[in-house]
Length: 80
Image (cartoon, rainbow, N blue to C red; front, side, top):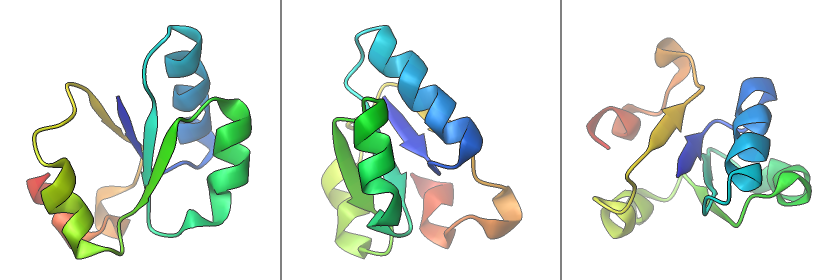
C-alpha cells in the first residue's frame, strides 16, 4: 500500500497498514519524516519531488491512500 502524505492521518495509516501485515510505502514531498515513518512501520520512502519516481512505481500499488489536501497536492499525484 502507498500512503501519500505522512502527516498526522498518514502516520495512522502507516501504523494500521503495518499492523495488518501490508508492505507500506510512503510517498512524500521531502524525506524529512523518514525516521518517524520507519519507527511506525513504513517499509520504504519515496520523494515525490523526483519526477522519475512516478514512472518507476506506475501500476505498482493496489491501494493508495492520499492524505494530502488536493489544493496542496503535487501536480503529478493526480495522474498516479
